[in-house]
Image (cartoon, rainbow, N blue to C red; front, side, top):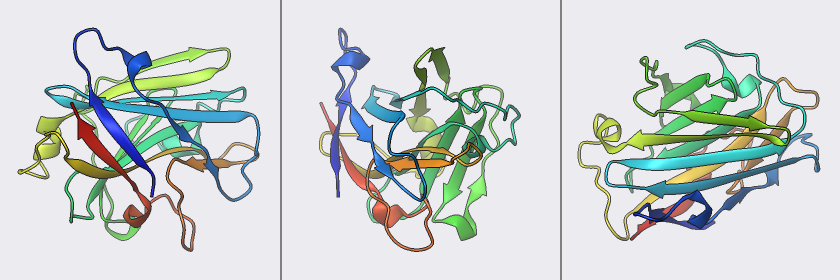
Length: 202
C-alpha cells in the first residue's frame, strides 16, 4: 500500500511546494508511453484541495452536461473514504470540459450519483489546458463531507483511504492508470480495498 502526506496550505505555500504522486500503474491495453499523470493533495481550514494534471497529446473532450460520463473522455479522478473503518467513498471525476461525475457508495452495486449544483457542490473546479495536456484544481469542502459523515474532522495524523486515477474509455486505445495498484477481477477502480493511505500533516 502506498502512502502520502497531505500537507496544509499555509501562507506562502503554493502547489509547487506540495509533493507530487505519480498515477502510473497501467491496466488492460493501456499504452506504456505518451501519457503521464500526476496528483497533489493538500488541505486548508475548510477543505481538501486537489490538483490533478496529465501530459498527453490526444485529449478526448466530448462530455459536457450535468449527467455526462467524463470517464469516456480524458478523465482525472480522485476517490476517497473519509472515515477509517467505513468503506463508503466518494468518487470525483472530471474531464477537461469540466463535466463532473460525483458518486457515493461502497462499490458499483450501490453507487449513487450525486448531481452537482450550479457550483459543482462548491468544489470550484479550475481547469487549464496547454500544448502538453491539461489539469484541474478543485476543493472538497469539509462541510460537504459532513453531510454524509457528521463526525468527519481533520487533525494532525488523521488518515483517509484514497486513490487517484487517469482513464479514457473511448479513446483508441483506451487507457487506465492508478496511483495505488488495483488488483482483483473484474478490473474496476471501484475497490476501496485497493486504496492507498493518506495522512494529514501540519
